[in-house]
Image (cartoon, rainbow, N blue to C red):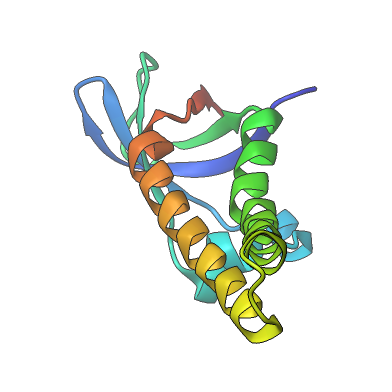
Length: 135
C-alpha cells in the first residue's frame, strides 16, 4: 500500500518542529469523512517534527500510512457499534434484562466507547507519524 498524501502550508517553525495547516482539496469533497476533518470549513493544524529546511508559507506534502487511516476509521466508526451490540447482548442474555434495559445498556456501551476513544486519542493521537515532503 502506498502512503496517502495531503497538501499543507507551513504556518510556524520552532527548531525541529513545524506547525502546518492542512489544505482542503477537491478530494475532500468526494470523501465520506469530510465532515469530520473539515466540517464547516474548519482549519486543521498539526505540529510535526522534520529535518527539512522549510520557510513559513511553504507548501508541503504530508504523508500518513493508509494503515493508520484505516485503524483510525475503525476505532472511530466501527468500535462504538461493536461496543453497543456487545453491551446489548450482555444485558439481554447474561443479565436477563428486559428489552428496554438492554437497549439502555447498549447506549451505556456507546458512551463508554466514546470515553475510551477520547482517552485513546489523548494518549496516542500525537504519536501518529506524519512525514513531510517538500513540494
